[in-house]
Image 1 (cartoon, rainbow, N blue to C red):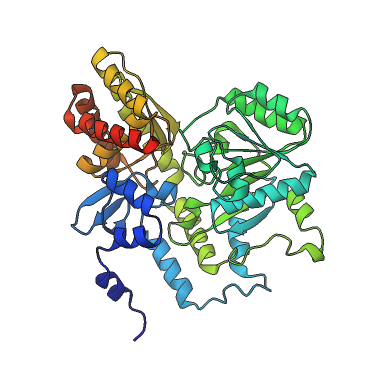
Image 2: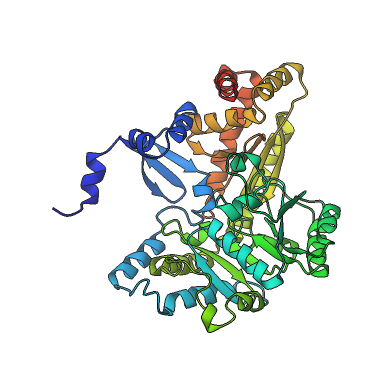
Length: 461
């Protein structure tokens, strides 16, 4: 009989949510249905998703930044087909395969000169876990610092770094030795580092939860303080890396020279999971310090040949299509097109971010009528208003976005780096329409808002 993918897809078509609810996570299905996101997607291409009815959706979520090249990029598809056809000797384990070395070389070539070693992982959180082990080994210190509102993953070490209590609730006790400082507060950082027992500061150059940005003066202090107190600087580029912010690495905006970089998401090309922890030779040599310790940190799938091919093809495509500079220019186009909406609509307070990592910040309006409605939503659940923007963008304009974090009125957009002026114009026109309705008091926005508020109150009870 054999396995036939088309037969499986055809036979089980339309059972998505039934199967997912029964076998995986019923609460996620409830969320999707409550906000109208329960679509049956059947195909993805470029910056768009297509459902079974042929409707097209502009994907400004991009798999949380995974689809930097868009979906189904032909270069990636060909590379992976070629790899499968080549019958590569995959995961031999007692081997030093060629392609991991080539991909490591390509990553190091794109980093500052102090970087010398790469350890491959299956995800961003695994890259962070590797970093935690390596920095403790290198410094012989146990304490690690992170920042409020940070997100570094959901495995135990990464979870212990997270700034959001919602992710940690119910999973304690977490790992010891982790402390938190306020993002952007150099004085608090110095107080924490002055004890000289902190192995590393793990920090995002732009925080994914909220799209929070710090000043250049703060980053100058971060670099200087880490060097002064012997603390390693770990920059989490899992979401910001590989062109997302208009530079290959977001830390380049601030002139940082990190000791460790973590990367994932976009490196996969959206096909095969892959991540990497990049560090200096000095740091790596404290872990792999002898032949007896050659396997002291490892992972079964770390050098998966298909993942290595995906990574190599992704880096080459970013170079060939000039996607880093394209992200910068498209980001500037967004900034220019969105600025008039900030002036026009009192609910939209700010647009922040860099390149194609953009946060739309909503807040309390001045006019009495709008303020009363906004505060009523906030009383039901902090940050609920932002969801009333996300939903009509999706239902009325077929644009997929996300709220930047629970309890905050920030909508984050992460367009594929292949987007251009056409996608900018489509999004800005859609947002203009939704905001105009909200300011006019349309039931299309505020009626749904009341439904969300009632659901939120019931949930919180």
